[in-house]
Length: 441
Image 1 (cartoon, rainbow, N blue to C red):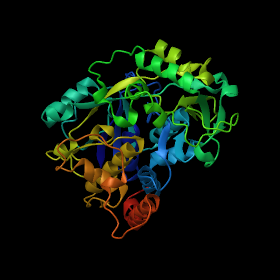
Image 2 (image 1 turned 90 degrees about the horizontal axis):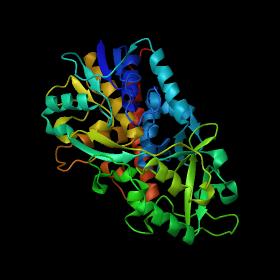
Image 3 (image 1 turned 135 degrees about the vertical axis):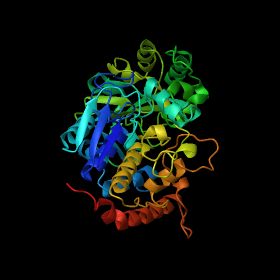
Image 4 (image 1 turned 135 degrees about the horizontal axis):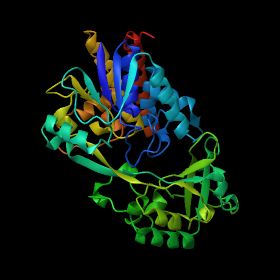
């Protein structure tokens, strides 16, 4: 049994791992180190180009449920994330470089995986292939995919951005303090307060700062979950105070009161030497980032080790092209995985790679697909992406809205979501034996 996986990001690495563990010999094609995009920094697999957070780890949140499903089904990515975890309150955040290194080591060390470096510009003419090249798919391969699927289905896109990173030692802690919102959990965030006057000056500078040129960029084409801070600021003076700079639940120990606005910094590595500006995705020019973000009092002398960048994300019109297992309907030997399918987010990409890998391994052995129903987060994602009734398809994070409701009323949203998660995990547990029965190592 053999298969080719193109792309060693989160989805591709997960897919290759699941195939290899089930006895499939995998050729994993990765264009790094020969070629990188503007968003890549290292040569490691599963590089986190944007945030180092995999978002909430609570079962009252849909992405928390998705992570727990993947854990119980022996996901490579979740295992590596848990091993390289850094404290981030109720979220699962990782040491960015440590995480990618660990994934790379695990994938490269598997005897059934052969890594072939270099850019792929054409799809294999025969054999089973999984395209997991992500939203940063090269132009050459995107054109090839476009020709194969009929042209128009690969021209959809949106823009997202990454936040800057600063060294902890350059943060003025006399103007900041450690805490988590409402003092829940441990004090994992550095909180940088701003007075109304400081915020006013910052907002004016932010909304008039010079942006880096990005071909085709317009505010309307930004993915809401990764909106540049300057785009959000242009929606109104106080918009940021209800978003990434909201002070609610963060009392300044100097005053005992909530500041007018608070910028939060989250640890980006296990050593705690680097922090990222939470919610500060941006495509300002680098000198402008330094000028404007240094107006935050605690960051007046901040040392930026990486500036924010923006990139164009290509994705497929999946409801017209893919089935619930992310297979190309006209030619099922070709499957897609990751953000190019329209699932949005690190964990969602991992889930698609997991499902593609398990389904393909079972198919190669002549077995029927693993039936993960819509009541599970993994199943709901595949069914959403392949839902042909969706006329205006847009990338989307996992949410409880695409999971069938309970058959009884539950008081309170958190309680209802907790019951939805419990139902899903009961199904996952009942299918776990079947899902792992083919694992050979």
